[in-house]
Length: 172
Length: 129
Image (cartoon, rainbow over all chains, first blue to last red; front, side):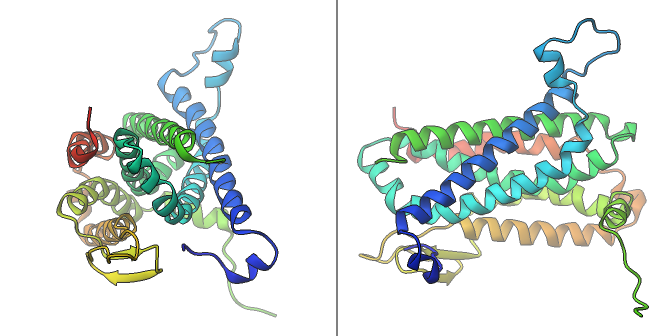
């Protein structure tokens, strides 16, 4: 079931294999969420000069957004890749029990999560382009709202993944 | 001694970031992706169907085989979307720039929001209260 390189199973169990893939997927997602949240806050509520003493929120949004763009693209692609890989396992051993238990809305939100993971992938080239041209005023509005939309999508995808893992993930 | 010109990755990235052709491709790719994905989802047009129980891949849409587990269409929808969006993006680069410059940039972030109710509706099977 699913795609498992045979030689790996000489060294680790099937469970360990999927656990490693899932953990990498989750860690990449956390890094992506952090990067996009900082960046979205920096364009949504930019720190003005002379804004007073810098507290936690001010420091959180006082990042140089452009320096996050390439990392966000790479993290989205890598997280997507690992998510797509473990999806085979999910379809067989997680979704079927979720449906048998009648958690229809949980599964519905998971389907929406996968839709937006793909749509986000399609937004990455222009997102990268806008940020590479961060000094072009023509792109300011589109860059700001595209970053915010990507951040909201990322939060939604992350929370749904977390809830689904709680419903039937590790230890189930 | 090699005579091949080496281009640093940074220079390549800078060239791409200043390319009008890449700009057109990326804008059309971003606009097309949510639309084409939604159409693929609603019409059920995956490029291929994956059967995780048997590792079999069928071209286009295929029904789940009894006693062989479920069929997965998301990989096929994703492939259809990325290929079709890339093709549209490429075709757009052949258009004159005075035309492609008129494409509203706001569509890149508005369309993912616009398709949300349609995608939610497509999942109506799951919204059982």
